[in-house]
Each structure stands twice: as structure tokens, then as C-alpha cells.
Amino acid sequence: MPTELNYWPLIGVAVVIAGFALRRNPVLVVVVAGLASGLAAGVTLPDLLALLGKTFVENRVLLLFLLTLPAIGVLEHHGLRERAKRWIAGFRGLTLARLQITYLAARQLISMTGLTHVAGHPQTVRPLLAPMSEAAAERTLDGELSNAERNTVRASAAATDNVGLFFGEDVFMAFGAVLLIQGFFASNGITLEPLAISLWALPTAVCAFVIHSIRLHFLQRRLLRERAASSTGGTDDAAR
Image 1 (cartoon, rainbow, N blue to C red):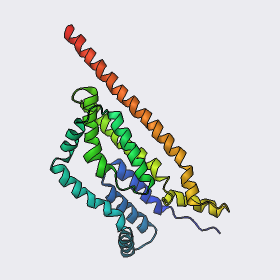
Image 2 (tube, rainbow, N blue to C red):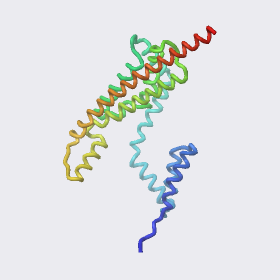
Image 3 (cartoon, one colour):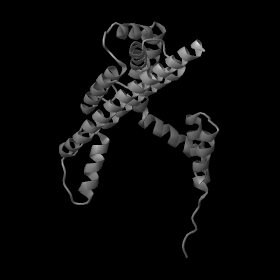
Image 4 (cartoon, rainbow, N blue to C red):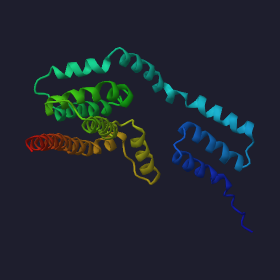
């Protein structure tokens, strides 16, 4: 007779869904979900704690990025964001689109060499790119940004970093996804070199750069159009 399946270990999925729906701490939710699934599967609590400790030790190198957070916090405390804004404000002719397109190109090229952690949201976007983009947007729009405009500019800075990283790292032949593709083809009798796979990612990276650059130009035009419309509306209201 077939063995009856035990669905109780899937309770961890329900814990994750409920925890995220209630906006609880993600780390706490994941740990509780793991403990719940393990206990439901019949694993003893000491064995579960030993497994958590072993996994943490084996993957502790992934937590090295946390060391950058105190350094960034100290730099921001001493005015890094303000200095970045003043520095960008001194460049004449530098618009929001030009600044972010330049960063997009640099982010893609650096990621293509495998240096994916040189830049990123905590290291670059928040302390440097976001305030620089705000200063460039204020120059482009010729005035202070509203809260909605400021949030849009910050979101665009974060999206630019994501696009540059995502489509740049695929060109690096030692990237995990490239090796995964090579292993998949090898398991099906097709031999491919990682370099050949990474080179096939170049057209996609170029297309991503062009498309996102166009999107940044459209974003800048939309901000200018909305600013002009709001100015015209304010003038009409004053005239009335």
C-alpha cells in the first residue's frame, strides 16, 4: 500500500505567508517557519537548533555586506549626502537623465567584470546616487522638488542600479547563472563553454541599456511636463 504523505511540514509556508502579511520581522518569520516545519516533520528541537547554527556558520560570508552599513552610517552622519548634492550641483548641463544613464553604464561595465558588490543600494544608491539625482533633478526642473517628485527620483535611482546589475552580471562568465546554464546543457549532452554563454548575454545587456536610457529620458520629460502644468495651473489660479 502507498505510504500516506505527511503534509504538516508545509505549515512553514503558512507561517511565512501570515508573518509577511502581518509585516513582522522577516528574519524572525523565516526562523519560526523553519522551526515549525522541522517540528512538524518530527525533528527534535536540539537537532533543529544545531542545523540552524551549522547553516549560519557555513554561510556567514554572506553577511559581510552588513559591515558596510556602519561605515555608510558614519559617512552620512558627517554629511556625505549633502556633499554629494553640492558636488553635482556644480556641474553645468548635467541633467537627471544624463547622470543616471552614466551610472547605468558604469554599473553594467563593473558588473560584467564580476565586481557586483562594489556598488549597490546601501553602498552607492542611498548615500550617493539618490542625493546626486535629487540635485540633478532640481537643476533640470529649476526648483525644489516636491515630495512626490523626490520619491520618483529616488525610485528611479534604485531601479537604475537594479537594471545595471541584473543585465551586467550575466555577462560575467563565472556568474552562478551562467554556470547553472552550462550544467543544464551538459546534463542533456550539450557542451558549452561559460565564455560562449556569457557572450550571448551581451545583446541583452546592450538592449537593456538602450531601453532603460530611453525610459530615463521619458521620465525626465514627464517631470518637466508635470512641473510646467503645475506652474501654469498656479498662475491661472492667481489670475482668478
